[in-house]
Image 1 (cartoon, rainbow, N blue to C red):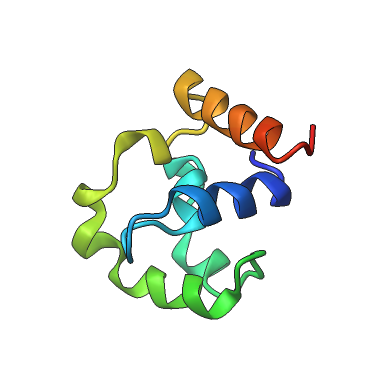
Image 2 (cartoon, rainbow, N blue to C red; image 1 turned 135 degrees about the horizontal axis):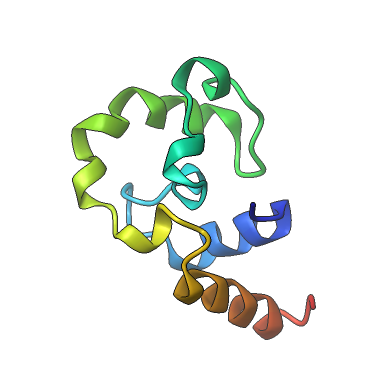
Length: 88
């Protein structure tokens, strides 16, 4: 699972308009609407709660890399961003 620091950095650096939210960095199987709807996220629970409502409608638009954080490319991306920020 991504750390809060990684979630924040990834969200702030590679979002694409309204199509990128931090929940997409969670493994797809971990998404549980009822359990996580009001969960606190580093970028603000309100934005995430809004996203839950429309997730299924535009899920297909989200690049696969954001679904599975075991993907080596996603892991490398996070490491590179953290190194660039001098936070490693």
